[in-house]
Length: 280
Length: 321
Image (cartoon, rainbow over all chains, first blue to last red):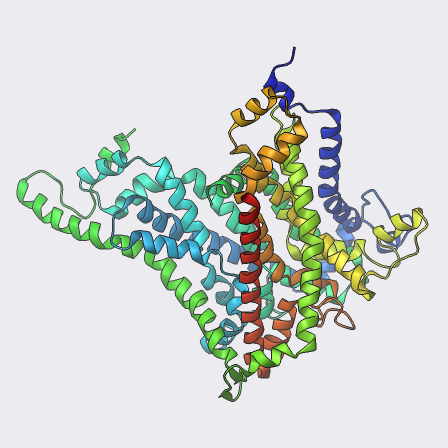
């Protein structure tokens, strides 16, 4: 006889059929991106459309590199710089503030934390137009500063680090450091930061992905001559929409590194997203 | 475990050997305890204040002006907002945004609910694989999604039209009609976000106590009934969270329609798929002389988000009774 709980969570073959189909739908466009990026241009126009990768990737990507108007390599470098700097800063500022909110006592702590949580619900586009004007005033138009500095802190980062620090770091540990006469910064650096490492890694990965994929603001404030990767891709796709294999080769190069990172760290990233959902 | 803590050298304070230096250290220590927390949270508040909060307030201020970004600014009160009410392009963008929002959110959340319910079975094999596979679209940038789907929806040799042709349907010019362009754009949104929402809903489902189900099963309730009577009611807070998140994203939809239109902020020849965010961009960034009007569009988007979220909140609360 089957127990009640087993019957309850039974998985029929149909479950797998549905999940496999969902997985196929999720993966197919990525696979298709690889197919087009490795095919010669004329084989793309075939009917029925090609379904297997070809051997023309080198040629296709070569056209991207030769394409001076696309500034693809500049975009790639810019994206690496911006995403890395922002990720490092978000993890540091987030863990520092998160530590303060979780483990230090100070006047106004609760109300300040609440204000941070409220800001998470504010749509990001709200300040776009004045921010654009501000960048002109600062002389940051078309500068990487414009796409870096405003993003060095995130409410999500502070909140996530605060949640993790609250449960992962015991007060005794902090107290022990204090009895030894360590400053709060030393406690942060030597005790808290190492203990926050798992959550910091997830926050870092999420931040890096978000920055790497960010579009609207870089698009508004950077020029095609000094783009981020995504901005470069967009201009490439406008100008060369007939040369799909070139556009797709660039898109694949911009996308697949992140997909590989995700495959390696997917368990942690998914864990982080699901944990965050339950808490908020 | 606390060994590393006890061996850590006390950096600014002198070594704690005698009593007098220890007292000096404790004064420093008290100052440190009292004020350094503010120092640690300051980076967030300074940068957020300058680059997020201030621009938002300034958006409100700008929206009360006939504001030329590179020229004159004249205070005109609420004129921008009254002009908005009789602006056909604004209503068009509003309709497009809601149309695409409905086509993307409703099927997407139903599908996510279905998939989360499947992934929630405890005997399921290859759990991690399925979760990762379903989530992987969210890792792909919106620009890349728009480029890939832009080709899939291509008129002459796109995959969707080829699939349709195999069942005898004529090629559709996806970019040329309202409903077809909405469908194509909504498909991009659905592809990128269904997996994300599935995982959030799954997390909510896993937080439901298992003994509720066991008790129901002993009472002879079918799986379907358990889903309606236990899972859905208990999932309400998570569902509301997902809906509000989708609302915030959906009302700000920009990149997919922009790239689908090959970079035209107008969104199709007849503005078939110009969204509110695109209209804001058109008025505030492309035409710097109407920045004040663009700012009014920005605040309109914000108020719409608040309104839609509020309606959702009330609906979910009422159905909880």
